[in-house]
Amino acid sequence: MVLLIGMGSVGSYLIILFAFQLALVGYVVALREFAVVIGACLGFYFLKETISPEKVFAIIIISLGLILIKVA
Image (cartoon, rainbow, N blue to C red):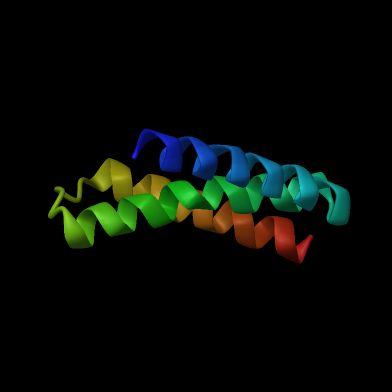
């Protein structure tokens, strides 16, 4: 199991490095940070985590930032 997790970690890092070569760094970094929003939403849905106003505010701000980067 540890080997599988290690391979996944290295694989995801290599994908990010490859994406840096293909796209603008700002887009890649913004999309990478959006993983936090996806993780939070999965936590709310599957793990039944509490949805605090701070978490909702952070999700909205991150999402708006991603949209503004794309529009700009």
